[in-house]
Length: 331
Image: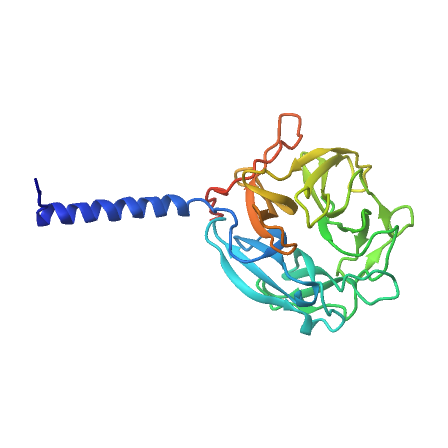
């Protein structure tokens, strides 16, 4: 027995197929998917500038190849545009390798790009935390100081993984540190140096229990949240924990982990940043993780998932996904 399909039925079938595929694509495009953009990127810094979401990650490669930063912008968390080489080592005369973990601030019509470089192991080496500046969030950025902003060890903290936090009184703080030590310091208003704290000290250690690196600070309902990465960055146990205090200076007592691997989704979830959309009070965690079954140290990808709080203000454990987040246009 045989059957034939008439021209009209055939065309109708094609239209139905095209509509179905188009609908699936449209539905897919309403979520970011994880990773949110291709290639190996880590330590993502997230920000909102000029009605756009921005992500500034570390190029995840061997130290000697980490000589530039790319950036990505999006109107809705789903569609991302790449801006290549927004800052390069050739424009920072003291930076040679291991350019890591951006932190971005918009101030007085300028955009400031804090970064670490050279992975120094002692005060005898040149490197540490630097700052660059641009008139646009997509750069190009140029070195502001011609030398590191923080180029030495204080309280045992390697000068890497900086985060810049603006308090309600307008004071900017830099929180940073590797080698299991975290420091905080007040920044000058033009970001050219640090100034003493109220007690006369310049750098104060605020290291919480199990801290390793990658600090992030934000303010919510009058409370200061300090988040950080724990475990080894090359392993599956990399994760994020947090604490809450009444002051940016602490004391910070560890509450627990909120981001970690899911053996069904990805491993090594850590070194993150946070986005808060004030219009709808939505919170997002932007982080890197490793594809399942991939043990190459530098194979890290950038992902986004939602972050929620309970009625007492504690952060709920983050559910990491392959689907990512829904579109949330800023305009």
